[in-house]
Length: 273
Image (tube, one colour):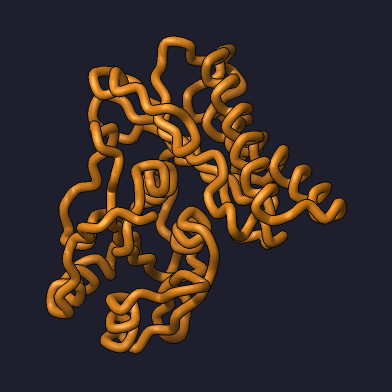
């Protein structure tokens, strides 16, 4: 158990019921532990990558769905791996989860994948947790945390390890920034949250579950999170497609948005496959 979770449990020890934040952190962490054990065993057994992807998705989905049904039976759930019940759009409380963010990295035995658990309440993200099982960490949206300090050297932008977008490449050139390849969306967002990189810009298509938990955690630390045109990130919509994201240190937000505008970055219109 890492120090953030120790602090969380210590400060809430007087509360008999598990708070939403405590639940989000615990479920993300425990789902991650299940996935890590599955990954280790499957790689030892030589399980094909395609099969391991499916096993991972189903394992984490089953655990999170059952746990939320048990602990928050009146709440609704929007999940990448579950059937979407549109009744959630009229609900006051909706859990937005990505049971396994980064199936490719997971199936390859890498560590740069994540588990996302977020709670949306009456129009806004209330809590979020991002588990990074390969690193033994779980990041939660505990209040009164501060943004990471700027590290010396050039700016660093998190990018896909397989395909850096033209927008990010041009932004990096404009800011003389270094591109840092890494895996899943949650892992890239966590790199901003922890100060490993300065910004994460995505314009190639995402869904609400890709960003909800990372955005909740990032905002709890005072980081900037918006769409790439500066507009608000909206969740629990009838169509969960949320195609782009800017996550960065607050002192960079205005310059980043201006740079995106000048380069001609636009809201993505094509859904990712």
